[in-house]
Length: 159
Length: 304
Image 1 (spheres, each protein chain N blue to C red):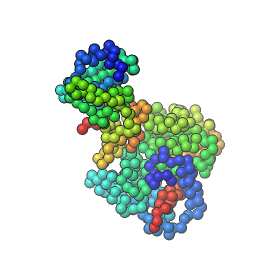
Image 2: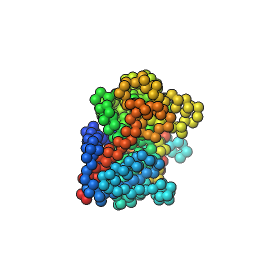
Image 3: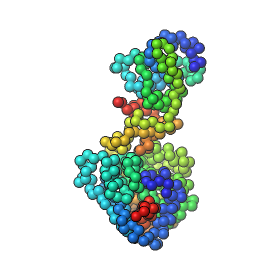
Image 4: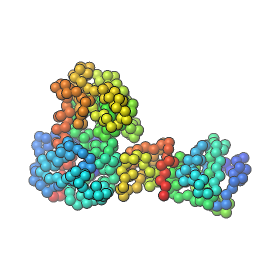
């Protein structure tokens, strides 16, 4: 990405990680939501560095999240795509980027978001997993039609 | 019909709707040969109290010549032993040719339909949908005022009213002008407003009935439930404001029809019953031919 050749490069180098994942091109101010999606609140002892509202050619301002010793599941990437549609995911091994990919907004997300409607059949004791259609602006439960927009990260299912 | 299940009115096209209504007209005039259905069994699974919907499905199946089996009161069934809905419908599927399901949770019918191959009809899922009520509502509207250039006011509890949600999706397919009249706290839920907006529906929201009454062909009134309000005073204020009387209807067009899915409490005064506007009892009676038509279309293709 062209951002690497700008002045940001210096800042990025400061916190270069050995093994783990760099989530780049997150919209400015959304980094904490990305951490919430990953279930990181500091209590687990993960080494995390974040840059918030860093100048970016593409986004104006962007956030960057670097997580040591962690590679993301497809589900996690899918959910990140909902709040950060332009994000790129860089997998780092021994200080090198071994894989770089853009997030891809899926048409549906399955078994990653708990429906916030307490009266939805997926929240009852039934053999069914949650499934949400992805809208331009949020997601929608395919069972009870509830639309979730602003507070997506709060409804990520924890294992 | 495109689908063997009837879950919401969203997946019914205008021609699906008209096919059911046309069949209902034929059936009311000339019921089909009863011997066709003598081996047909319809299961009635009502996990929530119901009188008219359940009785009208029961009547419809029996008038076609078939029989029904009934879950009975929920308190006495295996549900109280903790059985999941998914297990219940998979068992009942082995007993019956079709399932009618009412359940207190939104999305229950959709989920249940994923576990069975027999046709499943949603007879109400929480605050979600109630498509067969809509079909009989539309039958009543078509018989009385027709679908052309239709202007309808829908008043009351629009947030939790499943009959309202199903009706509005269907009216969108008929290009009706829809006026929604409710207190702010009971306006249409975000998900329904989203669908209506996406479908390009002609929708306006109001808080006062007087604003729109003279322009309406149909006034569809729903019950505002006391339990939706935390505060008794607030409930009384709202209930008083959304109260239809014969005097109020002097402001309406002469051929306005007043509908209600019933049961009503105070929202339509008894003096309206005596006016030519009142169509809610006719509407309730239409449940039988319309459900006969729907069952005939869903089950009629089954090789007995």
